[in-house]
Length: 237
Image 1 (cartoon, rainbow, N blue to C red):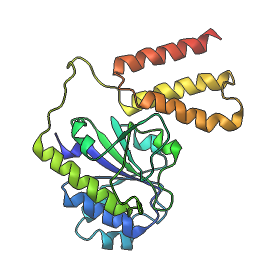
Image 2: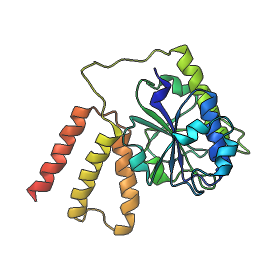
Image 3: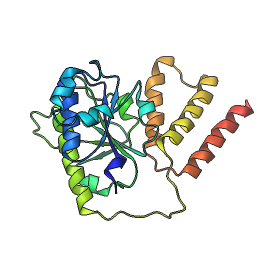
Image 4: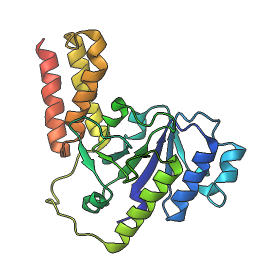
């Protein structure tokens, strides 16, 4: 298991100090991949570099994207962090449950902005939501604190070499990019028949669709089959 398989994604971070501190936390535990989506401050800037202290290399090799879908194209499993329990049909896990994750796959931990966290729309891209146990009276954690807790816990798991249930080597899991392409094909065909009615409910209907497909452990073959089904249904009209 390689730490190179693990990414930490900051979705619309607002404070330079937090971005720098997150980079430092990533390097503290020998991880390397920091991804930013639409950061509010200019990136990088002097304050980010100053608060990253000895982790400037993490800042310099980080990647930046305009949207979540682009950032997840080469990811297998997305774990979204949230202080709130979401009333969604998605697997809610604890830190202890991370021991069951297959870290041989490409894993991304997704963190929301300091002000509002992650929306339900952003959560719909995840395979799991993760809550860090805190006081019931004060659940909110600083962004960099949340990241360092998870980074330390994952680093300790990787050292213990947990047992992972194996699939047949002939079965290859679908990537997020494969699933996104399949979902986008499905949505285009549904749009063409004016499926999303009333129109104002389209965003929540899209969230629910993504929840269905992203939480499934689809193989690349299954994804290709479903894509063929959606394409064929589009041609029939």
